[in-house]
Length: 259
Image 1 (cartoon, one colour):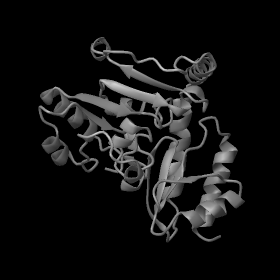
Image 2 (cartoon, rainbow, N blue to C red):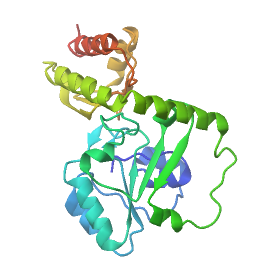
Image 3 (cartoon, rainbow, N blue to C red):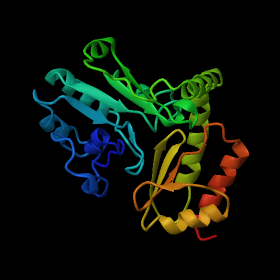
């Protein structure tokens, strides 16, 4: 629940939110959604008929909810008991966003499949699926596509990956994200219910609708997005200059305090 995996048919079938799914039904059958971070519910849902468990380590579109320390290791154990595959959706969390190259590193869990996109090529359209050797050996049929292996996308991906690793951008995300979380959690703003996140993936849950605040921030030159109707979501570039990050944080404080 609250998970978001995309708008193509299979990914949409795995996505929970009714407003995304309803216009495109019927979708792929057999998907079951359980509450995030609820190990009891997950344990009940995973059995010998389960093909895979698909999870985001941090639910971005769902409001920046971070998996608890025990949840992803429990999911791995549940999959191992039943013979299911653990699929970790890192489309939004990969390439240093959460303060690690891959967010899953924080939980010391090795999934069977990881999906990547977005920052993999610095914003140029690309996607990739990583699997264990065992899973890859079981692939059947053709997995080609018209634009698969696009040379321009792959060049952008190589350049982005080289820069990310050379500059160790996940360390920068960790440092700037820690600063951001500390400053935002210290705000005495009546509109704030909770601040949560990892690295430079931060959500500010409000007690009211987020849209008016997003508009005020845009007027100050700060572009943020919603995560649901009442979460202000921050996903700045990992290369954002420190003074710009400080300005954004100060602007958020002023807007939330109606300053």
